[in-house]
Amino acid sequence: MEEQITVLVVDDEKVIRDGCTLLLQPEGYRVITGANGREALNLLRDEPVNVVLCDLKMPVMGALEVLEEAGGLYPEVPIIIITGHGTVADAVECMKKGAYDFVTKPFRVDHLTLAVKRALEKQRLERETRRLQEEQAKNLYTLAMEQSRMHTIVNCMADGVLVTNRNLEVVLCNPTFMQLLGLSGPLPQPGPLSAYLNERTFGEAIEDLCATAETEPSKCLSQEICQGRVHLRAISAPFFGPDEKMLGTVTVFHDITAFKDLDAMKNDFVHMVSHELRSPMTAIKLQHEVILDGLAGEVTPKQRELLSRAQAKIQGLLELINDSLDIARIEAGHRQLELLPLELGEVLQEVIHLLEAKAADQKVTLKLEAPPDLPPVKGDRRSLDEVFVNLVSNAINYSPDGGEVAVTALSHGEYVEVRVSDKGIGIDPEEIPKIFDKFYRVKDPKARQIIGTGLGLAIVRGIIDAHRGSVEVESRLGEGSTFRVLLPC
Ligand code: ADP
Picture (tube, rainbow, N blue to C red):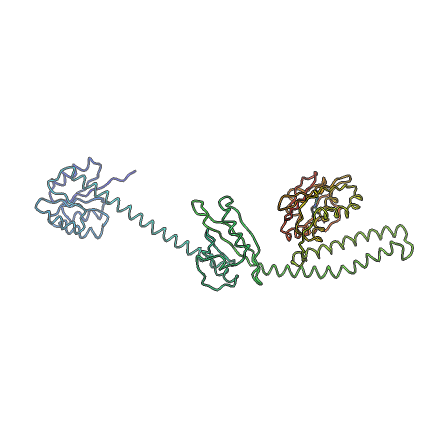
């Protein structure tokens, strides 16, 4: 409910007080009256008053004193002076002392109501201005608090933070970033990205994020950056303004040097152990072969069976050792690739040839389709042999008796695609993201008897990545799988 507006009429003449009451009440105002300035001040103290109509000259206390006292105590309440013709100069004096307006006696109805309305409007506008000022001050305070909080959080973070605008200029970075990168300030802000981090792939990633932000707003790029001894994981994402316009990018740098060192130690350890195991294992295998070939005397069927089983286990262990050494070399970047133009058709032909006996053993047919005009790819012969031996061996291993494995090569301009397809047991969609992990093997009862290390696909991915190619798989459980390898020409 709207509060009723109260007008205080102060005049020593009762007729004026009554007249004003009669004129203002029908306009919806509540009217209270006082006969002199003292009474007016008492009423102002006790009642909520919106406007005061005050006679200039009154016994006990006149308008000038009311203005003086009320101006200090109730600055929000506009005071309109009622004055006779001869005292206009005094009324002007009152205006100088803070009166809002004056009406001269005898006044017309519309003059009086207009003066009251204008005073109320002024009061309303003043209140609104004050409210807006207070709100603005509050907002500025909240903003300053928020800025200070953000500043503190960013500056105290254990991870490095780097923010760029949409022109790829650095507009903010925190002390951890400076420390991780070994930078000593001050650097220009906004300043070129290269002054902060001169890493081509990082610059390209930020550029890519800016270029695609509007179409892919939730895109997030993760990459490893090596700066001398320091290894960093950089995760970058675009950020947007309230109008959803891209404003720039933010990157968080996490120091992974300790993990990298541990990984290198683990690789060295695996390498050392594998090396130490390989020679005695090979010797045991050779000695078994000598016995199995009958060179150490006659072998009974029972002995032959036991030795053959041991031989298969040793072969499995040797494969594990070789695969472990391989993956350790790839991960440490120690595997030197000799990238030369390669006829993939020839490579695939040889792989098929090598695995024909194995396929025949498992009653699987191998098919190769490679056009003669396939453009050469840039590749390392020994490594690509290993890739396709792994993929085709898997396809044979995970096919049922009587199955069929097809190897197809196709040209796509700048890339050659090789598909290795089988109609075997297939892979559960949930397992697909994990099968390229080291030592991961799907726990499928149908594959229980298949011997493997879980390293083959990790080696495949490592080699293909080093060739700047890609490998992916499409599969349906129970229907078969297709591994697709793309290699640049
Ligand atoms: P493994 O030595 O076990 O074959 P890989 O790294 O080569 O190791 O493969 C990892 C896992 O991926 C395998 O254990 C198997 O479960 C699954 N896999 C790989 N190739 C195929 C395929 N052609 N069909 C079905 N499953 C496959």
